[in-house]
Length: 110
Image 1 (tube, rainbow, N blue to C red):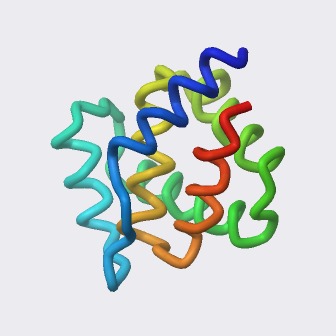
Image 2: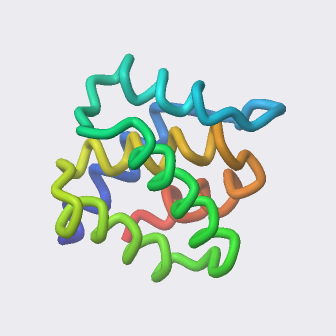
Image 3: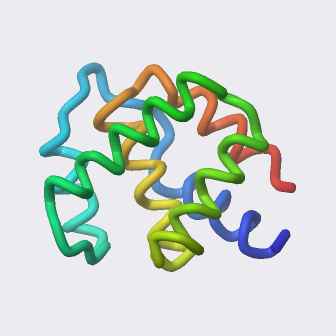
């Protein structure tokens, strides 16, 4: 499991270094599309991004982000790389205020 988290953390590190100034769900979707993340319903994916934002805002801890990542990969069926892309894209495009929590998670490397 450590390797999955470490790989995801490294991917998150490479995807972005700063959050944009404003939030936009369509930029979130565009980012997923450009990175090859497959999803079946655009509105369901937007809701997933909103859930990511709410989850991290309510509990910005490493364990909360670990659980969120596991939910994306094990419950929703995304590959670990896709899970990292989704979390990063949500933080960058839908709720930039959570970016520091995502960076702390990425940098924890556990």
